[in-house]
Length: 464
Image (cartoon, rainbow, N blue to C red; front, side):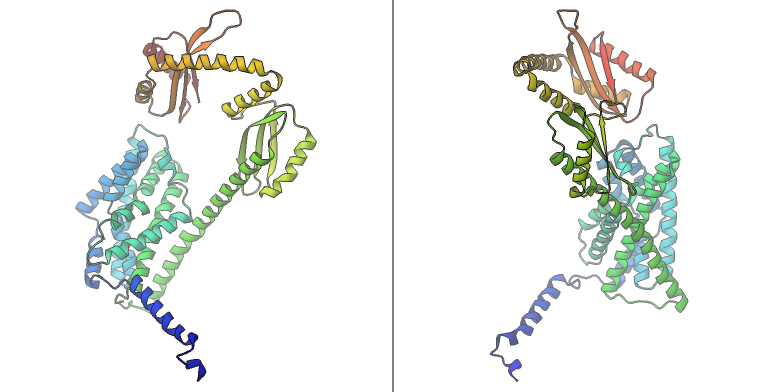
């Protein structure tokens, strides 16, 4: 037949497709350098049991991770994840499900429960006796799990079991999987939630640990089935059905809530980006300036809040501005314009300074030139004085020793012009931010320390 004529171009297509398929199978094959099935099962089984050295290693790793979260040290947290033995029973559950070994599943679940209990108890005790009770950024990052955490744990679990099934172990994969899947920090954060009585932190962190555990076990199960490991027979069909139903329930518990949380984070991010574009493109006014804007995302009713300085904004102009919001994906959001009162409003000081400067330029270029000259002179004097006499870095480190919750700190000798005096006064201006609100006595303590340390009688302390 003509269709089988080898002289026709289309008759060569099956050969090309066959060679391409062979090329792909050769490139992505997992059969090369594969370890014996019995050796892999034995290796994973050894990591399931939590007793002796495994248990002590877990306790030490929990203490290290808790300290890292407490002092907000990423390096310490990574170190704790590298020595954590929590991966053993989690991979054991996936392997047991993959080869239908009910005894291995039960043993892995039992040891994982013991490990979780010991981990929660250890971290709770540490955070209960620790003098540092502030939730740092590394700790807060483990309280809001999303679907991306599930993806990370799943692909990390795939990498871990594939590397573990090789005859020549890939030494850099297992540490990378331990860091990426991050089993240790969530369980420590859950302990912090128990110690501080914050059930929201406990629930979020423990759910993140559950996500990581289920996804690693699922990845192990899929690779074991893909490699064609010998499967045992369950004692009864009812047992097999219960195991399968449990797997699906666990996957749904992980995927559905985390997907919803991830979807909300995506919506919030898009809303904030749209708000930024809207303010940048549409809020350039002639006689008024936007000194601050806030994007308040809410599932029911989001809002965009503008803070203005300058001439009052007419109501019809506000209506016109609202009409432009749908073009930026903000049609369902409300617009709130604040002007004239800045109580309870966070104002960008730099933006306010620029706005006022722009207004003054409209009336007197020469006056601005004189003021700029004066400001430059004062800045040079302040910079010279600060660099000569004020070791800001040393002051910051000393203050951090007294109050570990300090976040930012700066100090400078400033000139204050009095309307009734011809000569300026020198004031030590100190600005600092802390992660908690301080009492009046603590503020006085800081001022006395600054007076003693800087040999300055006049201290102006600004704390946020």
